[in-house]
Length: 573
Image 1 (cartoon, rainbow, N blue to C red):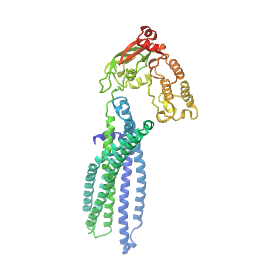
Image 2 (image 1 turned 30 degrees about the vertical axis):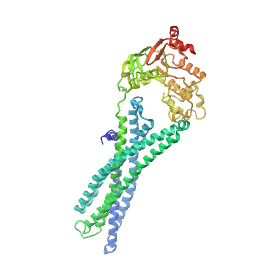
Image 3 (image 1 turned 90 degrees about the horizontal axis):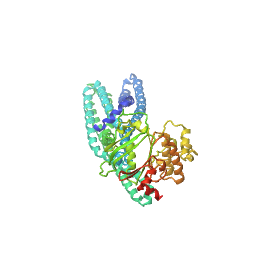
Image 4 (image 1 turned 180 degrees about the vertical axis):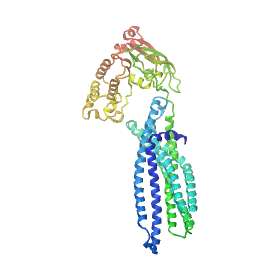
């Protein structure tokens, strides 16, 4: 149960709605029990009165009004409880997803990147959804059940203390025994069901997202078969939980029947020392009504194993420690753009291979640096260190003389614009994807920026409301690249990090984009990674990297004069 503590704390934000829903639920249960109890007594009393002279004096109107009143109260209470409690629960789940996402974001791209996208999606959707069991199927039914139990026993105690105590003892025994029993029976099945959902979602998403590659390599039938196997595992787990639900209902019906027989037998000689009268029917129907509050209790603990498993899966993310942490009250100031990398050494977690080995460089504000080298030599990793996705194991990186770990995260992010190799586009409109870079940008500014990067055709038709699809699949790879450049232009930070910004573009478009970037970067500090030797004459520094080290550095003229590796590369084109 300790795994649920972080989620119970979130309930304080919605205490009013959750408490109101619980009160309405209690009112509904009490109305339902009162309706059944009063109806049973009223029918029996009316029948007896009809056979005797009491039919002339029996008050039919007041009990009939009570039946109608409790019936209306039960209907209204049920509707109100559903509206209020589900509204509060949905808001709670929305807050929980935001809370989970905020905990997840600092872990990327750290050690948690080994988690599959589908697994993270399953935790964000299915595992968070399982948390509604804590309130709707655990806390609320238990509290309502205990209060309603005391109410029905107190009501019967007014007429016959012995019968009230016996019924209370039976109900209390069942209320404590059944949850424990069904928690033990459902614990293993709940864990299996949670893992089966995760496995099926992962396999299904892989199958859907990889359709093109699977069909190309004739691997689609095998993946489809594996997906169907995961589906069968999920269906089997659901069938077992359904069987357990049926067993719980059967046991409650059996307990209801035997308790009803016991209470009728005890009340047969009269209630409260009186001769047998319609009060026997009141006791019988009160007994049946009291078991209505027991129905959700067993089900709550049946699914507790599933809820705890989901909570543990969420806690793996929530309690994980980010590889890089930011101080909330860290350094913040107007950034000039001076960057200094001092003897930086870096290797990835659980890897003995060195990625960067004693790398040092210095950029004054407004200077531009080009990084060259073959794939895997550490260029992109250096950019990741500059944005503090990771921290070096040795050495340090400073921005305006302040070590990066001392910066406040929001200030550091505002100071740097990044165009990475992979441009992530979200399943939304063009406007949605551009406003990520500048939330207060006007439509005119967005349209002008798209035109600058050569994406004016996206303004046709629906314009900024054009839907890009999942991952931007509605546009080409080159267009996705230019969307990333458009974001960098909108962000307009004093430091720009460009990782192959013109990769995948034709030569003409590349020249246009480079001219646009150089115009935009006039007074900015720039780190520019490229495999294509274009635009290097305008760079203040050029560093050629190999195996995590800088093997040559200088401007274009200096490196050409050295007749080294850079000169050889240049002469080949």
